[in-house]
Length: 218
Image 1 (cartoon, helix red, strand yellow):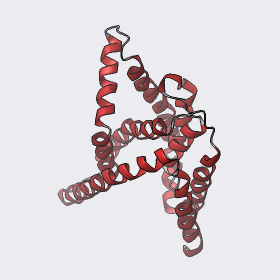
Image 2: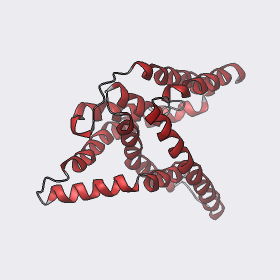
Image 3: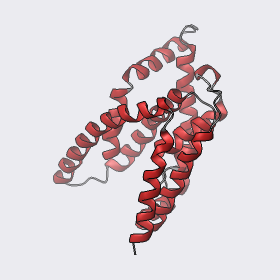
Image 4: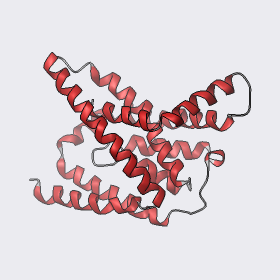
């Protein structure tokens, strides 16, 4: 439900892009060419969602078992930090959406699937992979968050049935509202950082938190 709150924040923040994608799909269906690139972005999102879903289905039990192992989470935070740090050396021949290919989508989708592992940042992994694929900075950020929509929506549908009592529903709704508010703020801040090419700065936070978890958890 906390993820669903941030999903709503993504949908509000990128509402113009989502509307353009919907228009692009509609125009593509009736055979016109003006919005071909918008329809192409929708296709790449669907394609990237496939490996994410496959990884989640095949390894769901193993992923869930890792949530009770804080030291492993700490190690994964360290790995996230290194992935973010290496974006400093990503190729600078930035590709726009018209040059984005199916392999870029598959690789980003795999990164999102692996980010089910606790401690691996979903946005960090997918944005970094986009940059390693030489995608434009803003496109890497937008694609990462637009790609989260089907993934989080699917997870929400699967997990919502586990909420049993009325009190749990209210707690979930309060948490969802708070995550929505902070999600909007965080998206504005993070997209600015991505445009500046400073996403590697988050590596210091990941390293610090990862080391704390490894050293302090028994």
